[in-house]
Length: 75
Image (cartoon, rainbow, N blue to C red; front, side):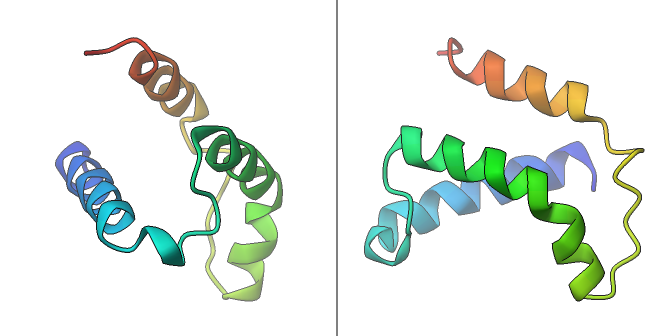
């Protein structure tokens, strides 16, 4: 996934939350971040169950963590 694709994905995710909030299980930032943590712990099972060969050792988790942290203070 290219950077621009990720930006578009996040923009669309935000729009979906605004338009379909009632369909989201996690409606607060606390619940969303907790669910994200649990999902990352279990994501290898998701990829295995959907027959996707994703090498989770090569995902750049550092960049993802920088994005999450930076977003907490970025205006």
